[in-house]
Every structure is written in structure tokens, then in C-alpha cells.
Image (cartoon, rainbow, N blue to C red; front, side, top):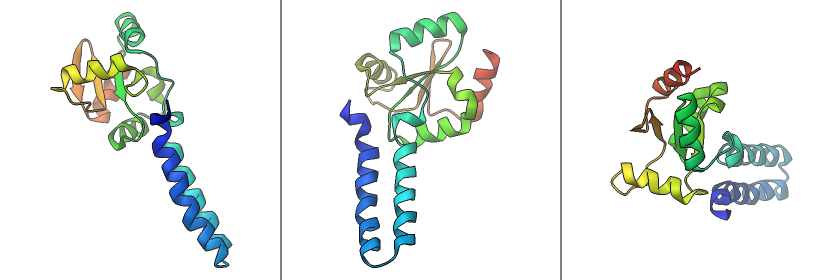
Length: 145
């Protein structure tokens, strides 16, 4: 559980130091800007920026029923964040599995990636796609709608 919050916590800690330094130097505006930038970075790298994760068993069951893609991801992954942002509001239609919270999900990703936990891995109709183009994923989501 703490592993998923490590990147956002590190962003907050790394931003607090320079912000306090700027504040002590008499630059409150710079301090506020620095703190806001690092809070934003922490937010987009936290699990809060992604739709609610479910377990891989439940994701597969739901995907079989509705045909929607299963997206395996982990916090702090720039490629996962890119996919999430490019999907926009449609991201909530996919079934998201956080591999750091679900060991079975991590094992599923390793099984299709030669032992590596390469994310995002998107499974559509039983076929795995590693770091697919967000436009392609968006098309798969619209097909299953």
C-alpha cells in the first residue's frame, strides 16, 4: 500500500524544501509556485488520478461481460499517465488494474511480457498489447460502448 504512494510523497517532500528555502529568502510568490507545481506532480502521479482499480479476476469477469479493455498500470508510470490523460473522460469505461496493489495482476503482466512488469499493458478480447497508442485504446473503448 505504501509503495503506490511513494512517488507522490517524494514529490511533496522534494517540493517542500525549495519552497521553504524561497520563503526564508523572502520570495513568498516563488515558494507558492514551487509548492503548487510539486503538489500537481504529486497528484497526477498518485492513484487518485486514475479510475478506481479493481482486481484482475474481477476485471477479466467484467471485460468478458461487456467487452471493455482491461488496463494494467502502476502509479508513477509516465506511460500510464500519458494513456490516462489521452483517454480523458472515457478512461472510466476501461477496467483498471493497479499491479502494485494486485499481485495476481502483476503476475498476469509478467506472463505476457517475458517476466517484465511493463505497463501499461492493455488486454482486449484476450489479446495483450504493451504500451499501445492511446488513440487505438480510445477506439476499442468506443467499440465496446
